[in-house]
Image (cartoon, rainbow, N blue to C red):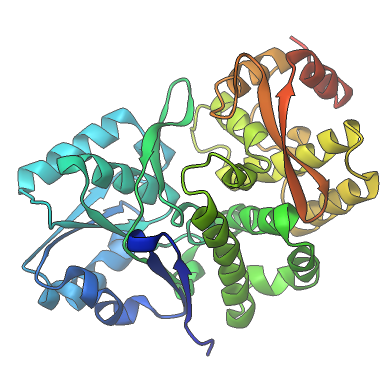
Length: 373
């Protein structure tokens, strides 16, 4: 059995641990005791994950709490909405809470983002704990304190920075995920290698099959290395004024693809990210800051594992260049009408590239065969 890994997100008095390993939920009382003892707790999950784990988890930690309640929201990206946020806030307020109440997000990225934003809002901020059940959430969205919901105008445009008190990443929970969900999470793992650790990317090229087969040594290592890299970047730039932007490699493209699909479930976040990674390398080559062989290597790996590597390979509907660019203009990194992209000098070395014009981006998309209108 893999040993339990512990990573600290170093934010001075707001530092918190990430525990990574198999069967952690079975020992949840041990890991959570310091954070929930003699406090009111509300566990929030969704209609898929809740029936699997809420019951046993509740029994495990109930003796520690003064009161424990369970809530569920509909599964899926649609729950990252103003209406779902409002409903959940009202349900929690109707239970009755105080500033010592702890919310626990038990689920994937949607649950973590939603519950984190609710925790940031209620009583101007209460504690919450992340228990991510998807691979994508374990390696990315549960770490770093970004919380929020989607707007009609775009993804994650309403939210707050609110750090959890603890992240419990139980790799055994990944066994219930469909292959497509695992692949979606794997795309974010690949991102870490591409943005800052060429050696890790090389390791993934050799070990991806064992990672996706959930061999414990490999999956724990992949989750740990991803969390390590994110924790290090977040500790240096919590609110994304500098290097934290590198974590958005592939995401300016990806968020536009998701907005085109209206978050209806046809396109998973990791699928959009994978296509975005391929395009980020292609755009870097087009700008002559990256060698073509690096881009070819990225495309080859994405295709080998079964992820889309380009906009044309996405399983969802397509849009014209003008529509994609309009969505990209709503990206949080955009400034004064120009776009900022995270591009690459090579595998393992991402860079911030500001002042990308609409004309330059249109030319790139046209060369990729995307319709202009």
